[in-house]
Length: 408
Image 1 (spheres, one colour):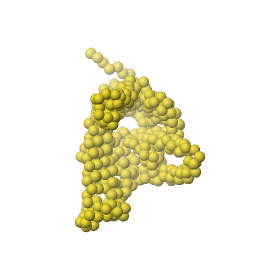
Image 2 (spheres, rainbow, N blue to C red):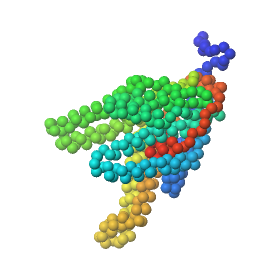
Image 3 (cartoon, rainbow, N blue to C red):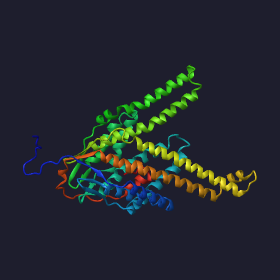
Image 4 (cartoon, rainbow, N blue to C red):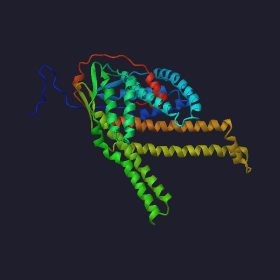
């Protein structure tokens, strides 16, 4: 009979535990739909409270060994962090804009320093935003926390990004491993220190074929273009190019969904907290249906939006009278305030509806799908953890929101 070895005087190691998610899909849909409606009324300012509600829903319905996590962040913190970040970013934008207007007369790449600066700010924001979210995450009464330097992380990210560009993307797995290692080695659960054992080579081996896809697609397009010019198989080069573009558009969601599934599985399998480790059995095709559903909803919402704008123009033309100049008058009226208000509301409604779809499929459903694949080994190492660590400010989250690099 096989027996599990353990140190005398200590409890025997537990078998691997499966993470569970108990959140209702209908409840989440109502949460984000109501939030989108309030965002429309508040011109987007409710998004800080909505992000907090989404995280609280995801956290509280995620459990390991029967104990659910807790999210203690507040929307007010995110708003204050965003306002502080804007107080720093807006003057930088304005000063650099004024300098750039003059500098562009003499140098074509005067905007390059601005792009580099904001890329560095973005990486700093990513680190600090994760630090904020981690310090608002509690499990079994013990807080996660994070130290380390956001600017040190940004410097590493910039150097690795440069190497990735120079290698035409081949260095990306090693970039991801190095940056995640820095973040995890500065992450803690009470007095238990984190680590990351995922390697860039393991990531690359899992998804090497995805790096070959772009050059392979380029070669296929080149071949089709050659056939269009040198044989009678294709009526014109335009038809060949259009056909190739359609093929690439159909394949792109599959390739991206496969890449994200591989990345999730590799990342989770590398996480460590002391003697605790995670493992993921996420399949490579786990996200296919989710991404295609988002694409289908995008087209449906776009069709509905187009019908709305057409109806606005038609009603306006009808109100102007049945004579032949109605449409021309309606086009003229589109420059006036009523048409702008209606058009703006329609556009905002389209954006918010699309956000509901993306939050439902690409946040909630991906979260639930990923958790189904996670197993936790060595959970007994968290039995006697002492509380430690301080709360972090929401400034990094504000930077992330202002630079559009926020996440969950």
